[in-house]
Length: 101
Image (tube, rainbow, N blue to C red; front, side, top):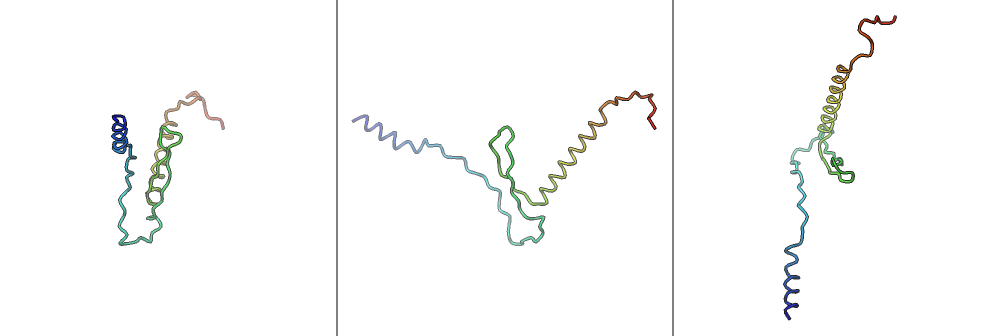
């Protein structure tokens, strides 16, 4: 009889210990009172890989304008590092060697 009571108690308590997935946070909705006709204000969502994982990715949403700004910033950063790298590479030509004509 005790085993039936124990099993029933565990069965009734199981939902309390069940793991529920964490709630997914969604970005706040933008007010649609004034719809924009500018194509740069259109929302675009992209899937980006999670750093440190080969399989995970997450969804990132931004306007076309914001995506373009991010790409431009990235391009400028890469160019800056390339310019810095070129200025620190030593030349293989001896400094007193005249340039060939």
